[in-house]
Image (cartoon, rainbow, N blue to C red):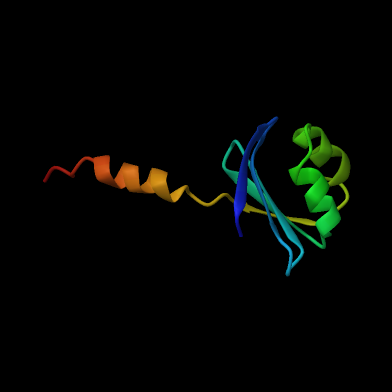
Amino acid sequence: MDMKRINAGKLRAIGYDARERILRVEFDDGSAIDYSGVGSEVWRRFSTSGAAWSFYRDNIEEEFAGKRGRAAVDSKRAELEALFKQPKEE
């Protein structure tokens, strides 16, 4: 699923799987929620909203069943952390 980075309220990224009708919402604390049964029109309105946090609170949070999880670690960040990781002393 392709994620769209946003900075709106506590939201940090959103993504949508049209085939499975799953909306993924990632938050600034590293948590994520996958909402099932989300139609493409809701995704279109959410992803283009000028007030994504308000849209999320009003139209998604209480309207759809969500499954909590963790946001995927940004691969570039993981690569940088691995590059600069200090070797263990023996």
